[in-house]
Image (cartoon, rainbow over all chains, first blue to last red; front, side, top):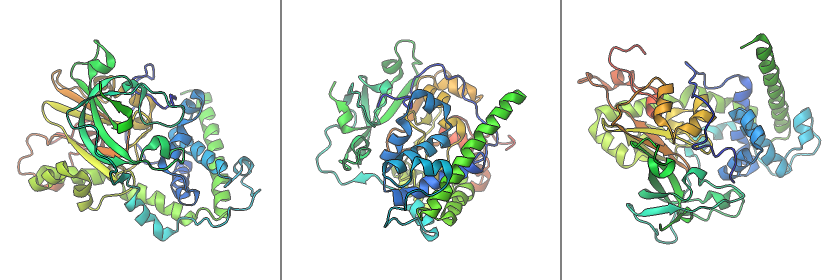
Length: 219
Length: 206
């Protein structure tokens, strides 16, 4: 979706403000929000692309007024409410209204370290040969999916060069909708600054994105 | 910040804090989460999974040519040799700075970041100013960090739009010939591994 989360090249946000000696978490609630989100992945059964869609699919004023972990929290609430795991009333009152969904197991303490160390690799066996080779010129399709995509607006319609081939990866646009993994070849595509930002661009700049094969066409 | 603003921020925070507490209560009572697992997750990212891991990788690459070669060929495997792997670092690529090329990493769409080697991302990395400007005005972003590069240095920005995670291998500072891996590790900063900073110079205070 062409949402507020898609920030590449947007003007007016001001300077970057690094925080000296920044702690890992700012306050207790951030710790719990982080851990709850990670731990709910198991009983919740959603995938990372569904999580990202739940976080980004909100009005601009909501997205921009929330901190990072507030967005995580809002995304988590959406995913749980959609699946009937909790109700809005329960979240607001802290009191149970509906019984737990049967058969869902929490992440047990002994499973924490192995789960984090394993992560969730997204590479899959190829089912077709790669359409593009390293060095090929490609154009990013000018498409505007209404739902989740990882094709940023600032590269759409622009021509770049294939620089790396990462093998076949789960395709987020469909995986976020629960329509299966549909793995596709994933490439790093490099663009020169002026191609993206016009004649005024820093001439020393190049930018790359990682792009699934169906985002690309021959120029 | 005025007293009023401060108070306003504080009460907003409390509202979120209450909501998170209520949520944890409900999810625990329903048997969806085990609070002991939450404590472990927090401890893991506060104590074990942080930029020290990336520092280890960089300092080793600076001192061990064979490791450097493996890191540049298959970063995921080379990083996992040092026992760092997993969530948000499943598919790693290391990009190396040279006198002619400076690399910088961003995620314009959310805040993807290589957790196993750098830990959880700092607030600025997740902020709109960084995500919007890193790809169009990286020299301006570097200026916000007090870094100026020569005008002729090429700048390469890697937007992490998929599940590949990038780690910058900064240039080993001059004047460190014969230094041990442990000595060099003192020079590696988190920001130098994102590309928004440079390593400390010998003699520069940590």
